[in-house]
Image (cartoon, rainbow, N blue to C red; front, side, top):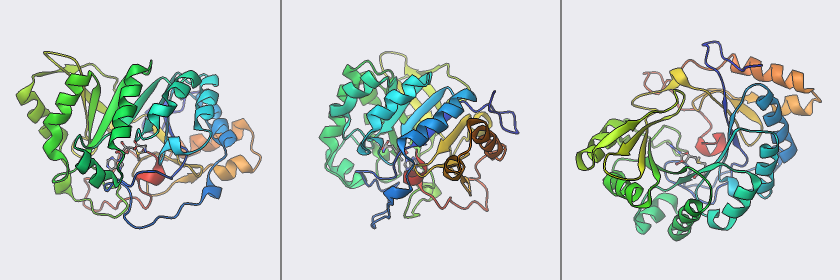
Length: 325
Ligand code: SAM
């Protein structure tokens, strides 16, 4: 059974947030004020596994484990192993990297295929201001450990915010070349907890491409239609650049993604106005077929596109740390 929405988009990618807790407090994501976390609302590992099992039966091929910070929830490595046993074709994780060096071998043994690590500055002091942590050295160690592991590709993600880290575009490109990694630049989206996002803080993919290609000629890499990133190689060497432009060049027409939040809600778009309770369906004693029907009914409501660029756009009430990036 293929999971398809009413616009004919096939849904093949799932992001599962396993916690809304994070050991970082990135300025473009989390609030400077204390946030509420209620661990008793989270799904149990068995429940996420059940949902993924049903979804794999409906055509989900790629599963990304995320959060919050997925590595702070005890049991996540075993969860990866359970997903691998379900036959997920492409199993990945997004992490801030703080705990990665010590967990990477266990994640590989559990069956993880690839990893995305967030790194928003190459300057330890600026990194500390952005993440409100002193974890720069651990994150670099995490990236190095991932590179030494069989995980491929290792992707490093930077969210660029004008006036904060946009001066580092070329430095990040050099980092990609030196380390022979995939460096991805993500446009800042209106998903920050403190609602400080403004359009003039967005550093567009076009600007990043222009600045990097002025220094080092780039050539496009063929990518899957549903991939979020436009990919480029350096003509003269190793490393790769990925440009993710949800604000300036939305890619909703090819969207193949759905999300499960840590508390068991399904979201059909990062910018959905509402999410859909699967926990209640699970806990009602529903069989796999009923769960599948509930999922299809939710997917039928998947939005044609996000509305960031519409005059009446309202940011979603749940921010990235709750949704799962
Ligand atoms: N803790 C993990 C991490 O740091 O990668 C996974 C969760 S984090 C919410 C997932 C991704 O969302 C990260 O790459 C982060 O930079 C990105 N993100 C968070 N807030 C964002 C925003 N307002 N705009 C664009 N990307 C954002």
